[in-house]
Length: 173
Image 1 (cartoon, helix red, strand yellow):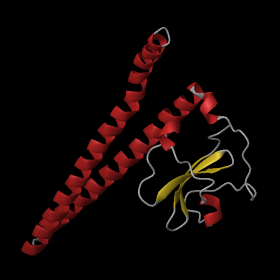
Image 2 (tube, rainbow, N blue to C red; image 1 turned 180 degrees about the vertical axis):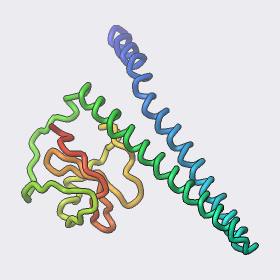
Image 3 (tube, rainbow, N blue to C red; image 1 turned 135 degrees about the vertical axis):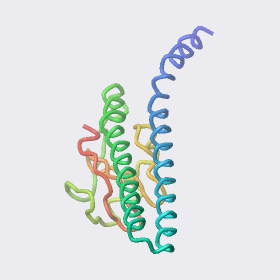
C-alpha cells in the first residue's frame, strides 16, 4: 500500500503534462480537416464555374482554390513547427535517461542527411528502426514511413522509396 500512494501521486502529476501535446495535435488535425474540406469545396465550385463558361467566375474560383491550398500548407507548416520546437525538445530535456546513447554502432560511417536525399535500405533496416516513437514524443510516422536512428540523428524515411522526409539532428546527444 505504501508503494501505491507515491505511484498514484506521480501518475496524477504527470498525466496532465502528457495530455497537452495530444490536445494540440487534435486541434491541428481538426484545422487540417477543415482546410481539406475547404479545398474540396473550392474544387467543386471551380468545376461548376468551368461548366458555366464565365471567365470572371472561373478566375475567382481558381483564386479561391489557390488560397485554400495556401492555407492548408501554412497550417501544415505551423503544426510541424509547433511539434518540432516544443514537444520532443522539452520532453528530451526533462527525460534525459530515455535518450541515453548506450552502446550503438553502425556498420557504415556517419552521413549528415538532408530531406529529399535517397538512402539505401541498409540505413533503415530493422536494427535501426525506432519501434516506439511515442516514447520519445515523436509523431506517428504514417503508412510507408519509419523513424530511423542514424548515430545521434533521427530520420523520418519513406520506406517505399528510400527518401529522407525529415531530419532531427542531435536527437540523442
